[in-house]
Image (cartoon, rainbow, N blue to C red; front, side, top):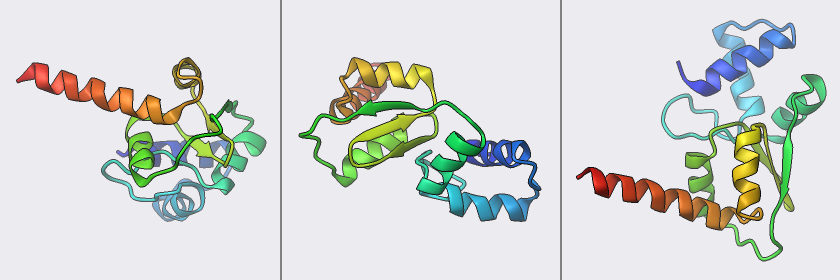
Amino acid sequence: MDYKVVLTKQFLEQLGLPSDDATIAKYLFIWWQNPRKEGASGLKLREEGFLTLTTKLNIKAYPIRFPKETVWTSQLIVRLNKFIDCPYYIDKKEIYVFSERMAIQLVLFSGDITKFGLAKFNSVAKKQQEAR
């Protein structure tokens, strides 16, 4: 089962809502930026999902401020979706992650998600090359 579906089901159960397939499908569209179940669809939250996790479920979010010079590209978003392995939410100034481990990784890059994404991409490429 897809990780996003598992999370959605757990959140619904914690909220006391039904966790049947129809309700899960409905909340995938409400809470997640990309509601696809399969593939590298990422764990980026919509504002409603972020507010549900932080206010209704009281799940701790770790904010990491972006450097002012951060340039947003579609490639950057694709990398974040691929390498951030926990739910996250982005606004204009910060990224909020729901994993302490991921927050520490981002803080080590001083919130520079461009460098973070590039470093993760290069690490994976190097491992693939060494495996050949």
